[in-house]
Length: 375
Image (tube, rainbow, N blue to C red; front, side, top):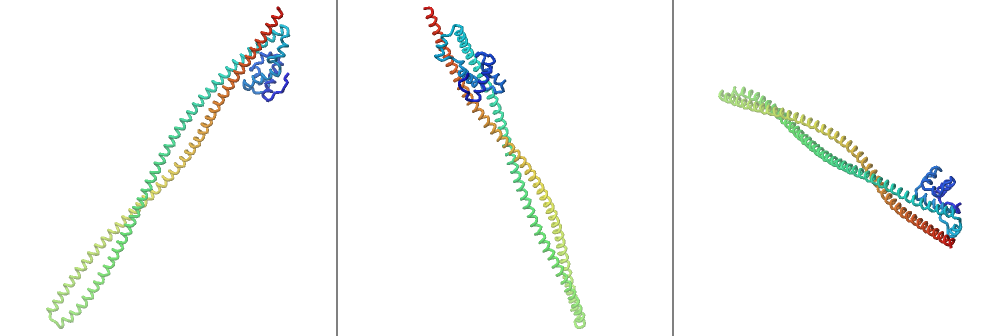
């Protein structure tokens, strides 16, 4: 049995599996990697990698004394009978054949694993290409959204400029209405002044007429009839002059009344235009507020969509980094597997060389003993 204990848990499990196979009357040639793997699974352990199985099986064989004997043991074996020597030779041949089979199995397993890794690598490359295409489409979508956002900003600036122009027009109309109102107030004041002046002139004429009439009556008593006629003619002329002045004042009053009516109509028209302008401004303000609300809602939706795309970008970048890490790990694993395969091939070659050397030494020794017996 073993002269030392296993150093790791995995080595202990593989030794236990080898002991179980040996206890099940299995020969050394039958204790193969597949048999050890099946026994590990039946014992409730993980099957592990082929390198571990073969490495720890070799340590078990070494500690159990099932590998090539030492020089002292070779001398002891040389003294064994021929059946034992034949059995030992057969055992060595079985070990050599088993080593070749195991080497072929390892090469086949390594080729299968390499094919699987290559297929996985191709799949990862295809997935990365799909992710890159999706990223390009997403980038184009983001650029389109930014262009739409710029257009909306330009439209908003144009609407604000139009609103400022409308407000300026409204202010101009308000100033014009104020000026018209002032002009109308001045016209009313002039009309009132003219009416008061006309009333004063009429009263003055009446007083003058009464006074002159009394004067004429007094003069009729003392002056000549011709002078009275001249006075009457002069009075008639004054009356005609006053009448003409009265007609002129009335015409001027009618003209001012007409101008007042026109000013009132213009004021009403300006008031209607102002009301229409205010209604239009209110409608445009409401439309601008609705457009601003819609714009803010669209901006919010675009911000949410942009945040969602940014989150997707972050996930894609994380996946790409993960893929790159996996690729680097796969490359590192391939390098390690290549190193392990090279080391294992070297170990197998060394073992084969050792077996061949032992076989040659055994054959030479047997031939030497045969020659001694014949002599």
